Amino acid sequence: MVPTRQGRPTGWEVVTVRVRLLFWVVGIALGLIGTAAIARAQGSSTLVTIAMTEYKFEPTTVRLRAGSTVVLRLVNRGILAHELQIGRRVVKSPKGTPDHYEQDFFQGMRVELLSAQGIEELVAGKAQLAGPLAQKFLKKEAREEVFEIALKPKGQAVLRFSVPAARVGAWEMGCFEQEGTHYLAGMKGALTVGR
Image (cartoon, rainbow, N blue to C red; front, side, top):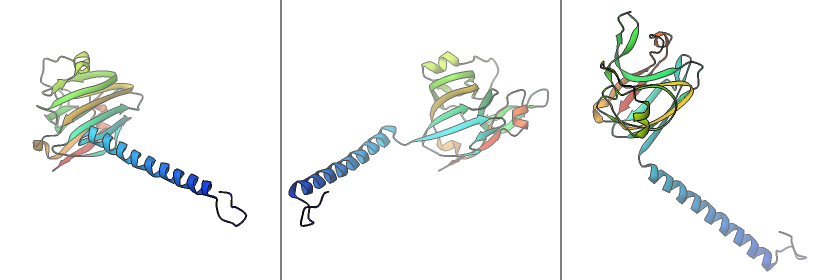
């Protein structure tokens, strides 16, 4: 504003300031409404990103709520292939190395593969894989296995699933690549489901 000779703004200057203020208030209101609409569109989904590197998961601890829908973004930031299994009680291979979990977190659950780039292996175990991408990458296995997804270096995948109340408690995330050497090197983390 440019003051007049008497030090007070002119009528046009006052109108200009009020119009700018009105646009500013309307812009903030529209931004809040847009944010609320996005939150409603996502529903009660929880977005979780897990990065895999040599030889760890980031974050090392993930907390979920029973009844929630989870959108899990898995990213391999390492130079080696890495996998994600979630379960309880490690089963050893005939060679005595860690191989997989006895109890699979995803058993009986519907898991939808929303996007994928650089999948090395996708095993359903006893999970119900959904979506056209899942069938493209699914590895058919004769033996009983747990759900696992392995990504090549720089690979990414997005999964969606709902957490049943029966999953409340402590679980472990693990990578059993290279005959369990990744797991033995410390590539594991905690996943906790609360009520």
